[in-house]
Amino acid sequence: TTFAVSLFLSGLSLPTNANNPEPTRVWISPLPGERPVITGYYPQGSGNKRTRDQQHPAGHGTHMGVDFAATFGEEIRAPITGVISFVGSVNKIPIVVLTHPEFRSLRRTTYMPATTDFGIGVVVLQGEKFARVAPLFHCARPCLHWGERIGTKYSNPMKHLGRAVLLPRFS
Image (cartoon, rainbow, N blue to C red):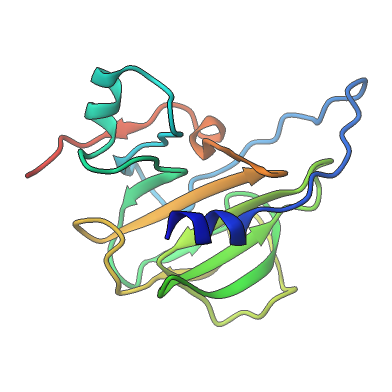
């Protein structure tokens, strides 16, 4: 299933001008308020065992995004202006993808489980509510998975927000 999602979410890199770096942009969280992160970003092969065990539940290989504690039906807001580029399901999980065209490289953020009433091509301004957390479990409790891809590589979206707050694991 991870391969299918990775394949779907992969894309082509657009050229970047190394002499003129992208300006720093201020992002907001896709969910309002202080949100604990249930599962942190964990790309395959990174970190030491102790760090992985604290942030990533046993029995899982990689986690290419972060899972925020959420409630079903809660509104999701655009962390930065984007265009809705996919609305549908991947492996039976409803997903909404925003593409952020103001960057020099192809940058997309993903939200799941999520549904929207907007169609593909709709511009969503930063802070605008564009989707809702769908009533489907991606985590052991209701949550929102937020991922980011820059070109063909996954990236930790938390870098835009600062430090994450992790919840203790429950068995």
